[in-house]
Image (cartoon, rainbow, N blue to C red; front, side):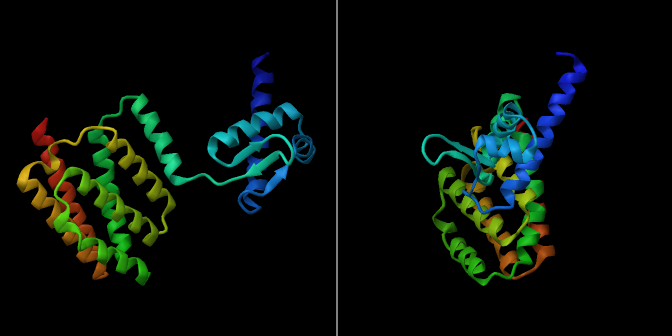
Length: 231
């Protein structure tokens, strides 16, 4: 196949992907989009092009193909957790080191915490207040990790920032693939973790974005200092 024909074919598939994605998001999740012949006719392309476009959208999490009676193409929605795991896998494949993930996590946290302090959902604020009461009992790395994940899950709901959530989830997943370093090692590290979480959550619950950002930035500086000292 000549380069011109190949480019033409790729352009056709790309256009079909965009049109098919628009058709999917215009309908409720799990709605049947149509059969292969129906979609070829609706998109004005051949069956092979539809199949290629469908594979792209399956990979993106927008489409499921069901076979047999009642089969066809069904629209879905990509899941942030699944996307972050896939991207984390890509980073691991390319040997991205965990200090890079920590750098990104702590940088995003500065804005995430500030944005959460502006949130007004009282049920989520109460959930965060209930979570902070469990800090004293979080004495192992596993328990601290579970707390941090629960805290992030609440903050993601408080802050409707899909891109920030995705990037944060990717960094957290990527960091989870590596052994924990010296950031919160020993008795001093455990107590520092508790102080940092209390200070950040208190600022969020007080509705003080600047203080929440300040506490997150102070935490970030200390973490990066600990990492630099360990190199």
